[in-house]
Image 1 (tube, rainbow, N blue to C red):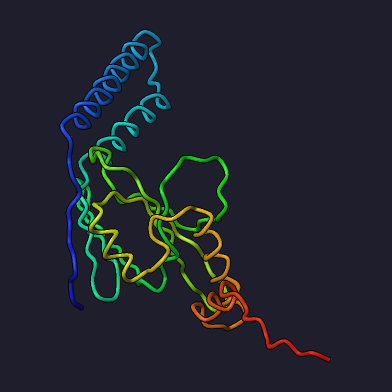
Image 2: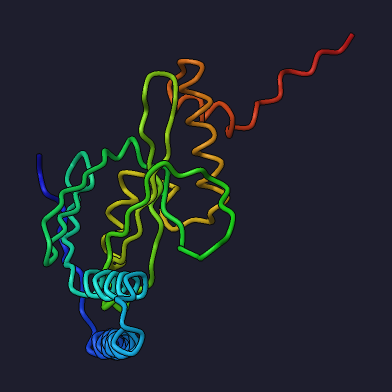
Length: 207
């Protein structure tokens, strides 16, 4: 396995200060919950749970660090947080594409797996990478959120041509084509080309 490109997540001071402000507010909330618990002579378990979990999630997303690695065959992401280290990898052939992340109530793709592989203290925009997990004749979709430099996406484009930083509709279409190709036992790339390549007009035959 040959490493073609590697980069680490960034950290902005302004984002770190914002996270710190949120944590301080939540700690104030914990203090107020303690005050209420004393007055009520009971432990407010639900309030404590929500506030403590919120602190854990915010801190984890802020301090976690990510290394994005592009090899000759796959994308590898190494995650390091205060709790543990994680390893993620996906072959280029299984990547449906990358589009700009936008929050939405309803999605056009049903995701079986969702991962966030970027830090809240990284000032760069968020991108959604959609990939496939093939199990027999069934396809499940996964999505991971990442933040990377232009060079990362340029190199990724060389291995996933025409589907990096494109409109979401293009990715939805390719994911649907993959699912249909796998269902019918067809090669995904050939099936996609067959659907997207205009048919050549046959010779005019005069009767």
